[in-house]
Image (cartoon, rainbow, N blue to C red; front, side, top):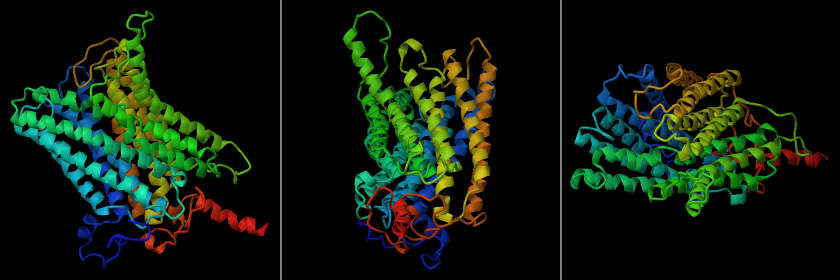
Length: 550
C-alpha cells in the first residue's frame, strides 16, 4: 500500500456515525491503526492490573516464608500466570500498540499497512491470553495436573503469539513500504525505527517459540509425554521467551520513545542520528539471543577463574555472553550518549529545554530497563550463584515496569494526537514519580534476596537477614504500581472524554509529521503530506519563514 492508497474504511473513525450503524461493531472491526493501537494499549493496561494483582498475591504468600495463604497446588500456576501476564500481557502488546497507533502518522502514511491483519492479531492475542489464564486457573500449564488444560495452555499460548506476530508484521510492513515521499530510511523517526527493529525481532523470535509449543503439544497429547518431559518440562522449554535477554527486544520501543523526545525537549536537531539508529539496532540483538538459547548455544559464563585450563571454552562463553547480554546494554548506552550531545547548548538550539512528563517518563523508564539489563547480565555468571533465585524475577520486573513508565510518558506526549487534549503535566509527573518508587520497591529487594538465595517460583524460603522486609517491600511496590496505573487511566479517560486543556495543533514544537495537521487527527486523508527533505520536516517548516524574513 502506498501513502496515497487507503483501505476501504481505514479513514473512518469511531466518531463517524455513518461509518457503521453499530458503534461497538465499528470499533471491533475498525481498520484504523489509531483505533487498533489504542485497543491494544487498553487491553494490555487491563493485563497490567491483572499482573499487579498476581504480584501482590504472591508477595503476600512469600512474606512469612511458609506459604500459608494460597493452596500449595496452585502456586506453580500463579507464578506462570504472573510471568505470562508481565511479558505477553504487558511487555509486548503495550508498546506494540503504541507503535500501531503512532507509526503511520509519523511516516506520513495514509493508513497502517495490512490493517485487517493487525486487527485480526489484536483479537487473536486477546483470545489467546484469556484462554491461557483459563487453562492456568484450571490446573493447566507447566506442572499442571489436568492434561486437557495443559493442552489448552499450549494451544492458547500459540494463539497469543500468532496474534502478536501478525500485529508486528503489520508495523514492520508499514515502516518498510508506506513512508512519505522523500523519507528514506535515514530520515525515519526514531520511534518508528525502534518499532521496526522490535517488530522484525518479534517476527524472528515468535516462530521459534511457536515451533517449540507445537513440539510440546504433539508430545504431550500424542507421543506419550516422553520426549520433552511432559507437563513438568514445559517451563524449561519455553522459559527462554519469558526472561532476559529476549524481553529487551519487547521493550525496545521504550528506548525509541526517549530518543524521539530528547531533541524535542532540548529544542534542537539530534546531532548523531546514525549513532542513535545503531544503538537501537544493537538492542535488537536480543532477538538472536532467544533463537540461540533455544537452539542449544549456552550463554552462562563461568570463566572468572584465573587459571588457563579450558581457556578456549572460557573465551567462547565470554564472547556469547557479551553478545547477548552486554551488546543490548551497550545499545541503550549509545542512545543515551547521543542524547547527551543533543542536550548540550549549541548554535541549533531554539531556547531553554522544555521538560515534560513525556520526557521524564521515557527517561526514568529507560533507566529502569537499564537496571534490569544490568541484573540480566549478572544472572548468567555461574560464579555468582544467582540462577534459580528471585534475582531473575526482579530483573524482569525492572524491564517490564520500566517499559510501563516509558509508555506513560509516550501517552502524555501523543494523547493530543488522538483526542486534542493535554494530559495534565503536573499530575502526570507526580504519578510517574510514584511509578518509579513502585518499580524500585517491586524489584530492588529481590536483587538483595537473590544474593541471599531466596528461591524463584516458590513461596517457601528460609535465609538470614530481613527476609520479611524484602517481601513486604516487593508486595507494596506492586500495590503502588497498581494505584499509579489506575490513577493514570483516570487522566487518560478524562482527556478521551474531551475534558481538560485543549492542545494546540503542535503543542510540543515537534519535528515529525504526525503533528503536521489540526488536532485531533481523525483521518490522515485530511492532512496534506509534503515531500520530506530532512529527518525534521516540521522543524524545517518553522525555520523557513524565519529565514525568509532575514
